[in-house]
Image (cartoon, rainbow, N blue to C red; front, side):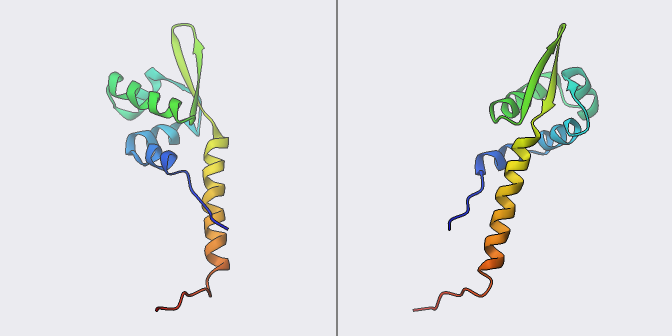
Length: 102
């Protein structure tokens, strides 16, 4: 059985600012202004990172007046967690497997 992990999603989450954003959104739904205040990032930089997170399916947007709120999609992170768990299970099951050298 081949176990695979979503490397594109890992790349998206590997960026320190994006991981900080995801961590903040795990606690509450926030608008761009909140995220700028919390991260100290410039508005344009933050917007670029939010676009990456949206396109990767990690966050959903919710318009509210002239503001855009961002909400984390926990099922995406849960899916990634399940992929790693399956990889760990595979490693445990294969602990005694050793390929002989030629």
